[in-house]
Length: 260
Image 1: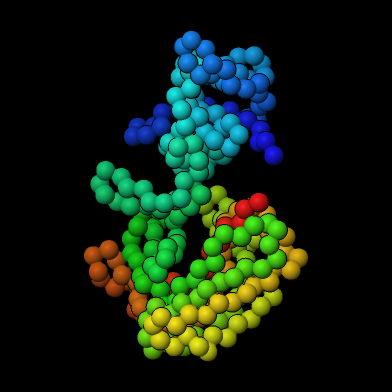
Image 2: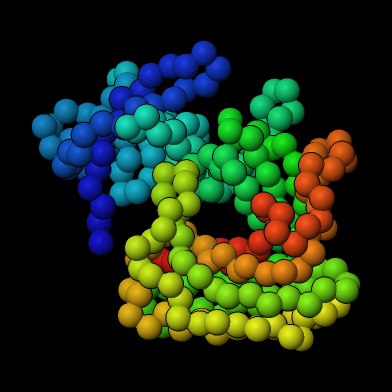
C-alpha cells in the first residue's frame, strides 16, 4: 500500500540538523530535469529547502528543489526526536565526539535499558550508556508477521548453577521511545523451565497469540525469572547492582518485530 507523503521543514541545530515534521500532503511524483532530480507536489511546486518523507523514505532537497538523496540525521515531530540513516528509521549505536554511546531503536533514543544478544545495556535519562550486565538467560524470537498465530522463543542459559521459573506476562509495544502496554492483554501461557540449569542449556517455547491481532511494530514480553543476575556494572567495571534475584534489571525480555 502506497504511503502518503509528509512534508518536513528543516531547522538547524548547533551540532547537527534536526528537522521538524510537518503536515500531510499529496504529491504528483518524481521528475528529472537538466539541473537534477525533483519531486513535484500536488500544488505543482517542487519539494524544496527541507526534508520530505516520500513512500516511507526521508529525502533532503536543496533550496532549488534538487534532491540531495536519502537523509541521515535527526528529525523532530511533536517534541519527539527520531533518527534516520539513509532515509530509514535507524536501529543501532550512535557515538558523539566525546566517545559517549547511545542506542536508538526504530529511530527512537533508548533511555532505560535494552538487551542485545547476551548483554543488557543500561542508559541514563539523557540516553547515554552508563552500565551493562551479562544476562543469565537470553531470549531470541526473531521476526513475526501479522498473519502468524504464534511466536517461537528460544531461551538459552548463559551461566552455570541456575534454575529458572517464570511467567510470560503483559505485552509491551515500543512507542516513540517508550515501552507501553500494548492494550492487547496477557499472553495466555505460563512456563516452567526445569531444564535450564547450566550454561548452554536451551529450551524453545511456543507462544500462541490467539486473537491478539498484532499490528506492525516492535514488542517485548517480560520473562520474570529467579535466576541470579550476574550483576550490573558501570563502564569502568565498578558494580552498580549486586546479583540479587529481584534486581531491577535482572529480567530477560523476549523482543520481536512484527511486519506485514
